[in-house]
Structure formats: structure tokens, C-alpha cells
Amino acid sequence: MPNLRNFERRLGGLVEGLFSKTFRSGVQPVEIAKRVVRAMDDGKQVAVNEVWAPNHFEISLSSEDGPRFQQIETALVAELKTVIIDNAAERGWGLVGPPEAEFFVDNKLKRGDLEVEGSLVQGDQPVEVPKPAPEPQKRAQLRVHEGDGVRAIPVDRELLTIGRLSECDIVVNDSGASRRHAQIRTADGVSTVTDLGSTNGTKVNGRDVQSAPLSDGDRITIGATQIEYRSA
Image 1 (cartoon, rainbow, N blue to C red):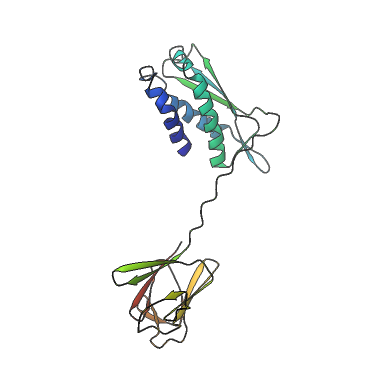
Image 2: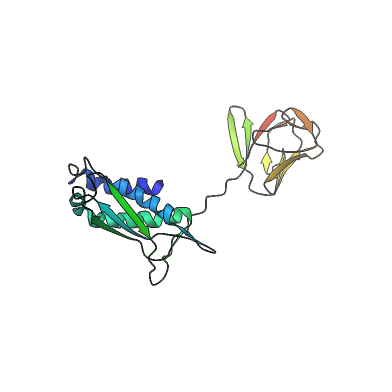
């Protein structure tokens, strides 16, 4: 998960530096973060309109491992709080209170053992978990093959005209193309090529068409010009 990779990177300098010898064996910091993420998943509660994840974690270590973490406990707790918020944001979960992590020593545990218990501890008000940024919308492309080069044109409007006229949206310098040769119309995510009464006609994948829907990889032939349709 991206937030665990970020966790390792941020704590890496600290662990590999002053305390590198301390963390050669036993429980590793990233193991704690992974167990916290797992406890969030195991302890989540489904409400009417939202999913609430645990926000308070009690982390128990053995009497051998516990003292090793005392030196970085403040930094580790701060990073674990970030992991909790980031994981909730990635999953679209809510937190009923601020994230908290507490460390305890359990003499029953052996070196390398780890227990993490998550719970929902309500604060004065729920924590505002940042919503993940929406992925940029991908657009289809028309790839015009000209000589040894390729010109990419985004399908970013409902209607695109193709022809030799300078006012066409896609101008092709091809004597076999009509001045207004064909058009690409896109509606509801589907693009269709339509011949505009051209002299030499329009082909899709080598077949003459008057109008045809386009799929990813289809090749439109106008005169001697090849135009490849690439879907979003």
C-alpha cells in the first residue's frame, strides 16, 4: 500500500541511522504499521451511510522488543497516526475521533511477538478524513500517421471534422481526402466515424463504411492517411 511505503521511507533515515543496530532483529517498525492497517480492516463498523474504522490502537511488545522502541516512540506514534488517516482516506472510511497509538510491554510475549488491538474511541467530533483526489479523466485519442511521424489529437469534444480544409478540426494534407471528408462524433463515451459524402470514401479496418462505431485500435483510412483510434 502506498501509505506503508511512505511510512517506511519517512522512518527509514531514523532507523537506519542512529538505531540501525537496534532494529536488526525482533519486531520491525513496518510490521507494526501493517498490523495497525489489518486491525482497521478487522475492526471496521458499517453504519447507515458510512464505514467507521478503529482510531485507537494499543500495541503490545515483549520485554525485549519494547525498550528498543522507546528511543523512537514519539516519531513512530506520529507516523502511525499518519498511516491511520491515510488508510482511512484510501478506503473511504471515517474516524470517530483522532488517531491514537499507545505502546505497552507484555511480559507474556516473546521476542518478535506483537499484538495490536484496535478500537473506536469517540472524540469531541469525528476526524475529517481527506477524500482521495479523483483520477484525471482519460480521453480517447486519434493518432494520425503522417510519413514517419504520428500526430496525437485528443477526442475532447462531441464533434471533430476531418478533411483538407484549414477550418477542419483535423487537417490532413492528402490529395485523396475531400475538403470535408468525415467526422467523429462522441456521445456517452462512444465515438462514431461518419463519411460526409467524400469522393473516395472512408474505411475502417479496410472496410468501406458510411458510419461505424469505433473501438480501441480501429484504423480509419482517409485517402492514403491512416488514423488510429485509441480509447480512453
